[in-house]
Amino acid sequence: MKIAIIGAGMAGLSAARTLAAAGADCTVFDKSRGLGGRMATRRVNDLQFDHGAQYFTARGPRFQSRLAHWYDQGVVAEWLPGKWVGSPAMTAPARALAEGLKVIREYRVTTLAGGPGCWRLLSEDAPGNPIREDSFEAVVMALPAPQVAPLAASAGIRFIELERVRYAPCITLLLAFDEATGLQEASLSPPDGPIAWIARNNTKPGRSGALETLVVHATPEWSRAHLEDSDERMTDTLLRALRPYIGPVDPVFRMIHRWRFARLEQTAGVPYVWDPARQVGACGDWAGGPRVEAAFDSGEAMAAALLQTRLPDPQPRR
Image 1 (cartoon, one colour):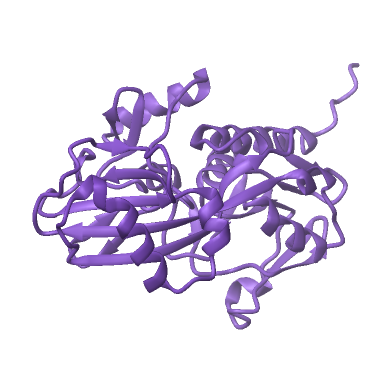
Image 2: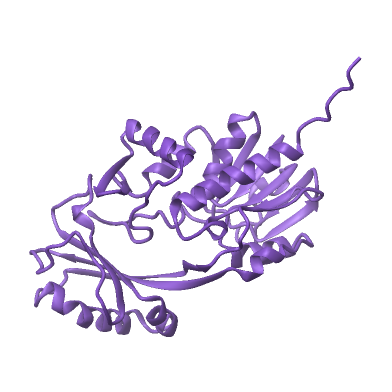
């Protein structure tokens, strides 16, 4: 069984790993160069920032088991009590899940062509890519809900459940200092103003401590209102709001990143969506909540549903 999985975040890799363990031939596609989706690490020269998900927790037995396995592999570490991070970067768990899988990076799928048993994944960005001629029996879209809808529509599919999903954007400011700031806490959530979260990235296990590095997430409200502002304007505003915590020290590096689908505000209310007749489905953190574990659980549930529909009919007893 050949299956295409679009998206190399936690949901997509969880689904791929489960399907591959059952004997499926999986190919994972992602538009980015890296793995992990919002479990992301930005590297600039010698600097390193976890600019997406800041940490994750493990509540259910399935994810707790996976966390224990990652811990044994040395790809996760506890940052704060009950708050885990990838080590030496947030992408480390995704890399561990992807080991042994076929992953095609920098291929943004824009159209599903063909039909059940013969799906082809086309890209307007890479029309000459050899994968254009390959075909798959089933397709799983492990993407934010707003990105699933148009891709599903290209195949004449509509998942009504996803229409209730709502995200808020998040503007992220990355800063590096060559001297200590006034911030003593490893993380901080200001009570008011445009900043929702401040993390001293260099306090996380496995990170370089050569420079003081901060990751600053703006509030959903401020991010939504200023998403299209210039980087300079956003940086100036967030730095002013940061001054009471860091003092007069000036950064030697600054960068803005825009997450347009960052904070899940309304879930789909289902663990995945699946069209058994068309053999196309979708999974993601939009199923269960804004947590890494929710994405992992959704990917596993999607894989289980796909395998169930593909099971051979039982043979009659003689």
